[in-house]
Length: 76
Image 1: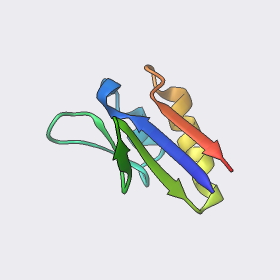
Image 2: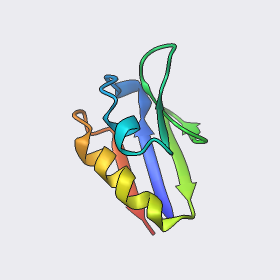
Image 3: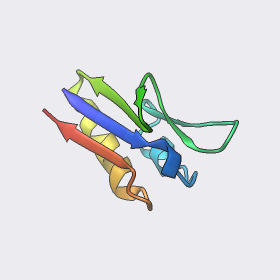
């Protein structure tokens, strides 16, 4: 199980997450910020639980590339 969290309010729209993990991230056409697909928003933290362990590597790359460090990825 992989847990991915995005603090969308702090996004600066650099697009790295969508480049490294397009299966999980898209850029919004409305405001230019990242969207974590199929996530649940709780107080500004958008979270998704992915049963596929292969999600960890691309999402971890996206988290490391994020210049404002608003993506967290945990493997449980």
